Length: 295
Length: 163
Image 1 (cartoon, rainbow over the protein chains, first blue to last red):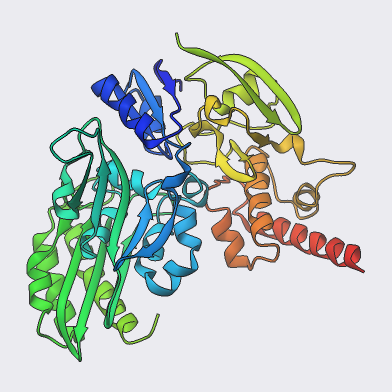
Image 2: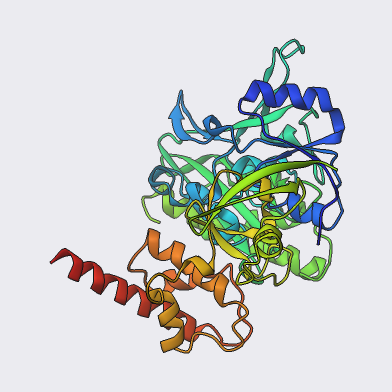
């Protein structure tokens, strides 16, 4: 399959990339890892007139802790996240997530920023970032009301299927995840038919404890709604509990009620709701185990 | 029609051509340069038959534009053989790691990247390592054995070289 014709641009700096996007308007698409965009172009689902390849922006490829946040550069490859020692030791939910995205060959090129900016509710990072209360940093032309840079809370970033809060002349540059303090654990559970498939359902859970009591909870759901779903009632139900198996099961029921799955070749609506219930319970118990020092 | 002149180093040889921006790397390899060892299977980023190394990293060449590889190094199955077969190629022969052979070039390139990063993978690591490559003949058992064969042989030669 051959994509439609386009003009290829390879800016070498962020400013240059933003200027190109600003000049070219909605005729342009950003090419990052390309593993969502190129297949869609081959199927002619999208036919951009211009491609702005940001793979040359090597300063957007980093994983570091800074000012109370884990900062992930948007061009960080999934395979880098998957094999990072910092991620494995301190943010294992991000390893859970990256290692179940597509397959190893795809992860060698696919980027964390692209996984979010594509706005696909079937992608895995969105739900995890919802559970972790992440912030999305985007850059646009200087002179806008925002002064060229703005930070968007993850819940406000996802607007609809394949639609985000990004303007056409903005680039997602960084993802900021609060660094855990005290007794905290988080986990991602994905059910897929086979390696490389999208989730039948996926659940990310993050639990903050104050002593033995849950003081804050985050729960995000993958591929059971038009955007990643925050299961607010399930979160609220956990706060104040010791997160027993019963508490986790109850939260699972609330998350299943909050999910909005559509029946398709991956399963019926009823089946998907049942899987959200089970996966939520499992993700919560795994998060608790990690908060207590386990894996 | 947007075109440009690019040069890609394929298997140690610079290959220059005037190409359309939309040309996929796999078509540059196969059609422009006649290196048909790299296969096109699904053409939808699933099967891994088109796997090549791009600056040493295994990628699906049906999902990279040729222009993105401008100035970079590509290794295909044709670049694996030196004076003798590469231990991976030998392993696929010795352990009957192929039947129809369609997936084999991709399997070997993925396995090459795996062994470069992790010279002594466990069986589970091998199975995860080739999970982006589909084989419809063998049930994977002998492919895993072929990679283990190559791992052992490469380790032996490293040890001999070190003595």
